[in-house]
Amino acid sequence: MITRPLDDLTLHAPLPRPLSPHRTAPIALRERLHYSADTLKDTLNRRVGWQELVLLSTCNRLELYAVARTEDSDSLIALIEDTSGVPRPDFDSHLYYYSGADTVSHLFRVAAGLDSLILGEPQILGQVTHAYETARKQSTTGPILSALFRSAIRTGKRARTETAISRDPASISSAAAKLAQNVVPNLGNAQVLIIGAGEMTELAMEALRSRGVKRISVISRTLERAEQLAARWGGQALTFDNLLETLVGADIVVSSTSAPHFIITPDTARGDESPPASPVGLH
Image (cartoon, rainbow, N blue to C red; front, top):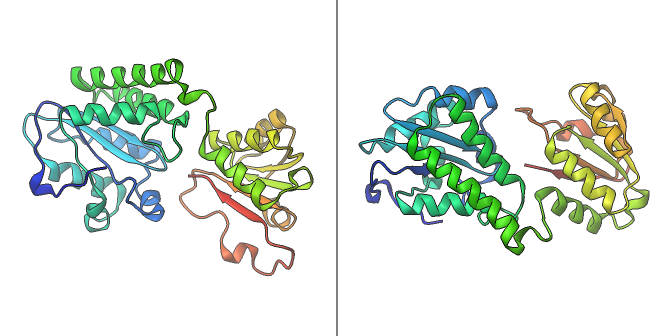
């Protein structure tokens, strides 16, 4: 990514431009800048001074694509401050800016999986599509961003059907499973604890099963969600009431939830004299 100071930024209106703390931003900051579904909708509805706005918020990036007749970067940065609660000095040095054709090129690379932490990972195309659909339903898109995102989505699909980038698809979850295998070589005898019942944890379960894992426990906010995921992959469904006792016997712990707080803290495992589990956090 090319990082430029704000004074050097030139916006060629009405083409869009994203702002995003990504790549250089530490994980702790990215977690603070992750938008929930409700916050995302609220932010879109507060697009004062911007004709069009789309927010792409994932665990690894926050990107704002905006269209206006005149340049006003400060209002976008203020929007991030107001809706995330993160002061500008905390993320200002991690911002980058694109305009015009550079914006188009960047979004196309994102949709194709070329800008991901793991090259070619398949989830990002769905996230780009979801970002556009969310903005469209909130009526914050127009002819420019609609054309841009539709073209980017088509490009992402073509990249996966016309090139080899999806021939052996990887994801953060599969990379985490491989890491777990390096730490716990005999996965067939390992006890795995899955915390969360979303897409990332399901991908992790699939990757672990393919590597020989047989014993899996699933804990989710609701027992019903845990039961659904456990049924699909032959695991045992539990509730958070069982967290401590299950944690004691786990060899590998995979956690990926939408909770705004830490699920496992040092105090959670303190006093456990059993060998430490291998924790994997998916973002």
